[in-house]
Amino acid sequence: MFLLDRRAHRSKRLAHGAATSAVLVLIACASALAAEWPSTRGIRTDPKVELPLDPDAGPAQKPLRPIAPVRLATRGDDRQALAGLAARTAPFEVVGASTRPDLLWDPQDRTVRQGEEVVGTDVAAADLPDVIDRTALVRLVTELSGRSPQAIRLQPEGRVRRAGERIQIVVPGVANRNLAVFSVSGNGTVALLYPTRRDPPAVAGQDAVFTVEVGPPFGAEQIFAVSRGLSLADFVTTLRRLNGRKGAGQILAQLDALPAIDLQVGTAAIATQP
Image (cartoon, rainbow, N blue to C red; front, side):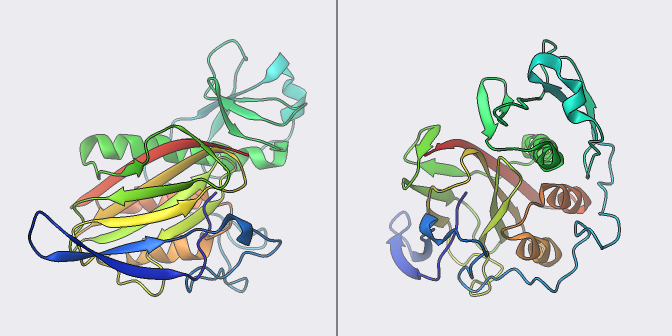
C-alpha cells in the first residue's frame, strides 16, 4: 500500500534542452497507516459520503459490459469454506484447485495466490469479493491498455519491493492531459496518488513523477494511470471517495463507463513484502 503525507514540493528539470517542466514529487509515508485513514495532501475520506458499497446504501454501480467470471478455488478444495459467499461487483465461479484458477485461497493461512504470486495475506472469506473485484479490474485495464496504452514506469526496476523502499512512478507524455494515478492493494484497498485537491486536473509538464514508500498491507500492488484530454472529474471524485477503502469494484464500474475517446490506460505491478 502507498500512503501520501502532506509533504509535497515541486522541482524543475530540463526536457531535451527545451523548457523546464514541473515534476510533482510525492512522498508516501508508510508510518502514517493508523486506525483511521489520514489526510493525504488535502484528500480525506468523508465518512458522511454514502457510497454504493456502504451496507446501508443502494446497489453498487455495475459495469456496462459483461464481466467474465473470476475463477476461484480453495486449497484442498474446501468448498464449504466459501459457503454463502456472494459477488460484490465482478462475478465469480468456484472451480477445482487443479484447474488453474485465477485465485487460490487458503482458508488455513488466509493467503490468496495468483499462480505462484501471493496477492494478499490475512484475507478472510468475507474479504474475497474485494480481491475478486480487483482481479477483474486488472483484467479490464490490461484489455484497455492493449488498445490505447498509457506508459507508466517504476524506478528502480524490480518486481519485489520491501517495506520502507521508495519507488519512483513515472507517467510520461501527459502534458495538458487530465490524469488520475492510483493503486489498489491485494485486498482491494484504494490509494489515490494524483490528483490531490492541491493539484490541477491536467498536468502542466511533460511527465508526472511520484515517489512513494512501500508499506502494509503487503502482497500484490497494482498501480494504474488513466489519462484523457477530456475531463476525468467524475472518475477522480470516485477515487477520492474510495481513498483508503476497499473499492476495486466501484473503480471497475466507473472505468468501464468512461467513453473511449482519447482514453489512455496503463498499469504496473509489484509485489510488496515486510
